[in-house]
Image (cartoon, rainbow, N blue to C red):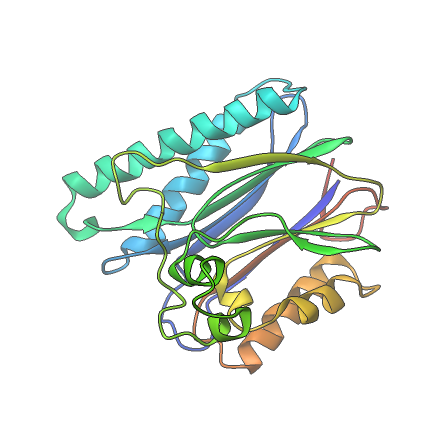
Length: 253
């Protein structure tokens, strides 16, 4: 696996509330995590950094996990633990009250990958045959689309498109969505915050993911384009390739 994490403040926000990274456990297994914080004066970055730091520490101290069931249990437990830590921190610190964060995490093996998420940060699977969103947004507009009240096109410009119905740290308990899927040589994953998907539709993301550029170059093109289209939000991406010769500046295992 190769992976590349990129993040950008955007053109409007005065600081970046997104966090993320690529990490390895004691057996060299690959995990990528991305969080988009929210709430309070500079509290969003506290929440996202706490979430990513928690999964990093828990993963780096873990040993080999072989089966989808083992990895799914690990991720579900980790998200519940980070939720409690963030919620307790907000309760004890007035400046952080109401803070929370989205989270999307993937653990990749040669045969399968497992994705866990809360909120509207996304994971896509990309290969020669499809560009498929693996996660389902925990958002108001997604509920409206599923119920038939608005179309996918209307959702893109809906005035409440950034209303998240579930986040890490905003309630005492949270339930994450977790699933495992098989993947093949040369398949790619894209993890991203809504600062990207609010600006670039799926067909454009698919086009950029299929360029013959390095992962870093493709990710930077996405960020640059989102900024050209306004850049009102922080923009973060993680690009992962199943099997490819290592490229300069990329993390490999």
